Length: 505
Image 1 (cartoon, rainbow, N blue to C red):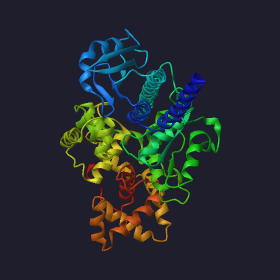
Image 2: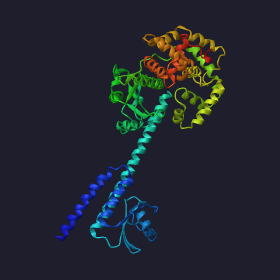
Image 3: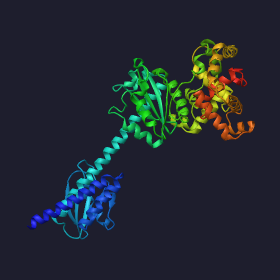
Image 4: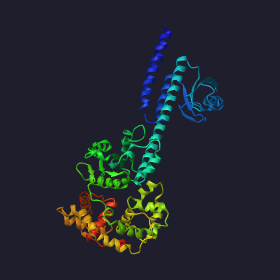
């Protein structure tokens, strides 16, 4: 009967121990879990406990643990840590000590249980179970660390593939993913979707739909390295999928999320994989429009960019002439210039993994070579147009007569039709006069809302309201000061509403 009662008491303690372990497992930090387990054992057996790392450091202990015993125990601790023994009972400094190695893979930590008397059998059993649970908690932490490291690496891989595609090099993207080519690269066309959400939500959404290969089915999701609130999604779309294809797959999933605040979704038109950069720019414009849409979702519906309609030869000659001073500049300077025309300088620094001071130094070098002022929105618009047409260092030496060529091209029928089509939604608005007046003054004051308000004699809130209305009508992101503003500059210049930007004179 005594043995049965003893066994029943031990089983009861083990049941209580298992309940404790279940509660501890729900705690996010390993130290909190270990503290809960060690504190329970301390209360049950009236002993002092310590967890000693393989290097001899006390990672965790009860308040009354006698640290002076660690010196005499050092050889034993070393043997246990390196796998030469599993469990040892010792005496030191008047204490009875049980030392139990935690885990099976050396080097390993050691659990020390210290009392003034020898431990009874059931206490030894509880200590052994505690060591096993601690080993399991360590393995769980290691597994979580491996999983987190894998998720980070898969995100970095997806982002690298995205950057290669934005650069127009689909072959490089294939080579980077050799042995595990994402299905996206086998699609004929893609859409870029941008989901605007809380920064902490991005990983949760991407991880929830990540498959075993680290991709997302026929698409790729990744945190935007520039805008903290953007989750970028590249979704494959074949030519034969027909109308409504954007409602399937990842775009459809994101549409479901965007149905509820505070999510917003911008979707590009379908583009060949080599035009990923253009699709991304359209998605940026669309998410800006979605911010002020009741549906919270916007598919890009705007006019094409000016570079798509200009006569190719004169536009190319002009772009080569304007960019020729950059032919001898480092490639990084040219890359930073292109990115800085689209993103804030802090975003460029994050994207390239360099400091803002380095970004500023490269932009200063570009300004000096081009003899242009990058703070001037007209100069930025002209440079952005030139970089969309060609790249520095490509082609023959520029023709000095190229500037008149582009001036004639911008006065030509194709450019005029583009500009009229671009501004048509404004012309059809009932407050078209106010909108045009605000946009013209805003551009002429170098997109400074305060100066615009002072010039027009109205409040900054009214200026912002007009810009938001124009942004929705034009299907362009104006408030970020990027490519959407450049299209507006060109359209206003071509239609004679503002003076010619200096690089186009």
